[in-house]
Structures are given as structure tokens and as C-alpha cells.
Length: 219
Image 1 (tube, rainbow, N blue to C red):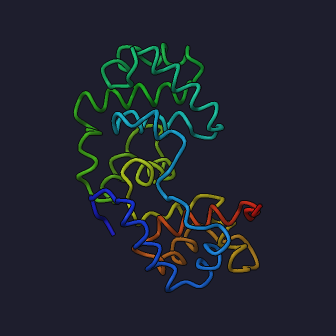
Image 2: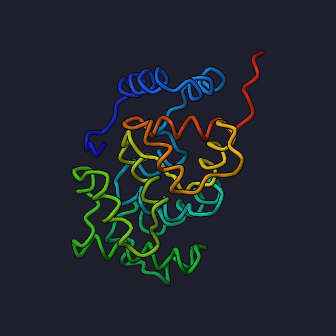
């Protein structure tokens, strides 16, 4: 599914209804963990201003804790005058971004995103209007953005309903655990396995992540 319409909270309930009606394993996970908001993420408030800010946050947050990512993003925000926009980031440059505590690779990637936006090569304002596959192609062509980061952006910022990050190690372990498989499935195996959940693969992903957490305790 490659809809470009942002999913509403009402849509989420309908998505879960359709998904759980046809998958008893996911339904059992939902019985324990509820219906997690598939689009919620800790950087939501900090990056609500623009797609560009959200994309930068996803790059900053690669392979570090959410707490550290938010600290680094706040430093960048302050350094560019309060809003993370392409002009301010480009003016700061990779050297200035690196000085805020980001790795050299991330500083280069963030500075590069600003240049790509300003030159029109990657217009982040237009990503809402593109289907999922085209967003993936556009984002992964940029330095420092791989499939996982692009998929997280599709889910968290563009609120796309049919995204399965098959390469996510948590998703792969959750599939093994929930379906009692003999070994952790490969990325291709998870991708093929997940076809059964389309067009609600984003909700399926949220449940798979939830299944890795301890069951909530009632008081």
C-alpha cells in the first residue's frame, strides 16, 4: 500500500480491527499489550515543525539512546536559532554540527541533508505527496540514510500505515518468538512472512515490538 494520506487516530482503530481479525497470533499479543499507537515516538514533539527536522532527528538518533538523541537535537536546535531548518543547518555546516557532539558521519549526513533540500535534490516538504516506495528511494539516496531510517521516517513522521521494517532485529526476534520458529528469520523471510499483514503492516510492527516487552501488570 502506498497511500500518501496521513493516517488519523480513527484509522488506527480500524486498521487494528482488520489486522487482528485475520491473525490470531497478533490478536493474542494485543490481548496482553493492547493496541500501541504505531506512530508515536519520543521525538514527535521536538520535530513537529517540519519533515526536515524530523528527518534530521532520525539521523541523529541512529544507534544511540533516545535520551542522548534528544539532547543532541536540542543542542542543534539552539545552535541554529530555535528551529532546525535547512538554511540554518547549512550555515552551521558539518564542522559546526560535529562540535555539538554528533559523530563525524552524522554531522556530514545532517549537513548534506540541508544542502540536498536547498538545491532541490531532496525536497523534504514534498515527501508527503510521494508513495512509500518513492520516499524510500529518495531518502536512501542521501548519505547516512539507510532503509531502516527511511522506514522509521515513513512510520513516525509521514504516518504511513503499511510499513514493515523487516531488517529491524527486534522485529525479526519477535517473529521468531511469537511464531515459535527454530531460528531468527532472515530479512527476506520476514518481508515475505509479513505480506499477510498488508495493508496494516505498521500496526503489526507496533505489536511485534510490544511483544518483546514484559507483560503489563495490573494493580
